[in-house]
Length: 233
Image 1 (cartoon, rainbow, N blue to C red):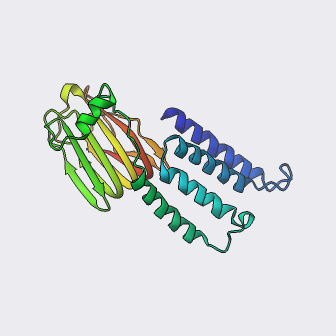
Image 2: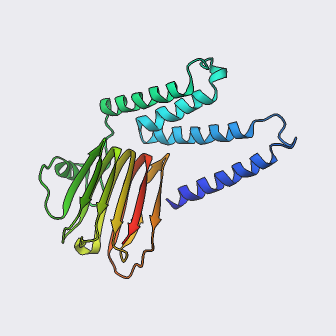
Image 3: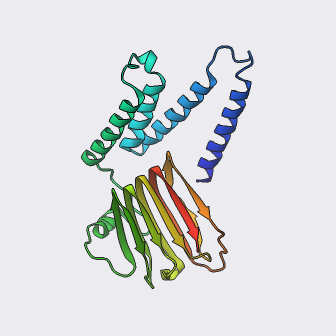
């Protein structure tokens, strides 16, 4: 996460400098803004290919097509038509080729994780939340909370952990989201480690973490075209 933030920070600073000097004759007729946007889209396309994410591949290509529609000879289609087609293609390919999810930290191997993934009932320490095309609110009141699997697509999910107690002072939440907003409400004395990867999205924290206990919550997974908000209460 830190390396990613440094990369994007330096990239946007460099972009700002190039845009400021673009009115001068230093760079000639080169369109700096178009080049900068193309570089970002190509980077996102590369990450989408690396993660085998249909939306992470299709949307950058769609935006590149919109940007260079005159060169490609497709200016008659229109940007909104291209974006709508990209959204439908992303949904279709996501159903046809579901992404194989990686093994969370707490499980020793994929076989052990698949045993958990196929369970229909969950005990007081492990649980799963799925949200699609709707809004959901979950309250975790477990006294031995250890792991949660959160899946959200085309919707929003709010999860309250203020009444939860961590087993061995440590718990994991695996997040897989696309076109969604996820909010976590955690006790203000918990330490939260955010390892979630974002493609066209980001995270933010509200209020202040006091970090007065040894309780640690580790977040992992990936969100595509969405956001994660961590609120300390």
